[in-house]
Length: 292
Image 1 (cartoon, helix red, strand yellow):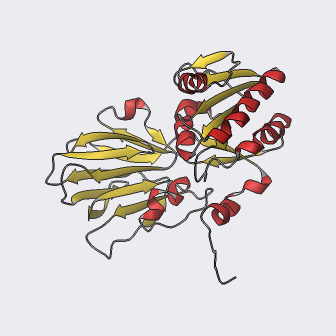
Image 2 (cartoon, one colour):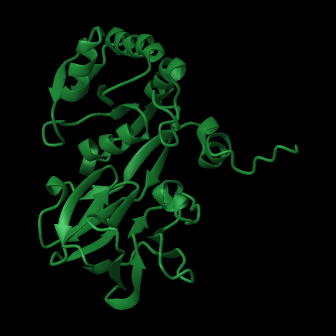
């Protein structure tokens, strides 16, 4: 059995004993452990004893693994997806951050969760990824994300115009601060804060949501994830910001950009008590009424 682990660059002090316990447990079970170099260095700096078999720096030298453990917040899990890439290794999200919408396992539950995974008592949720295509290399070639792709203004207070096309057919010219294309997983993130709908993870859709649009009749819309969505950007400023999950780059208006569904999926490990609808209720207080 091979387990790969990646973690954030910080965690609450009360999480440290559980992380140490996880590493000790995997060693006691004879599990071959691969640790990201970033997380390995952080753990050593904080006095966590790491008994590992392999250190990896990126997706190219990660190699194979039976499953992957992400230790941190939702941002760490998004980062972990970039290490896994086409390998589609099932990923277990441990939340040592704040919200933990994607990473649902709390630190005290790490060992019970690992025991269930090692016994095969878990489910896999397949999540669609969004892929960015452009005539210039962006995001270091790691051009896929789990949550969303975003275009926003950068060096001016003026709005930008984002001419948007679906499968080559003109959709709309968005006068706005930006535009989001979110996956169903990303529907509970940036898109939601811009008035977009919550979409179930199994839905085969993208959400197109404008950021602070000038025209109030322009609303978020849902399109098939078989669509190719392309853009032409203009504005008073020369540069614009494009983001893919937590990564961002500055581009100019001459770059041609389109997004589509990635050919591979992200596979999240879940348990019966951690389904999407339950997470909506517990993490986002979905349907909470203080009168009841």
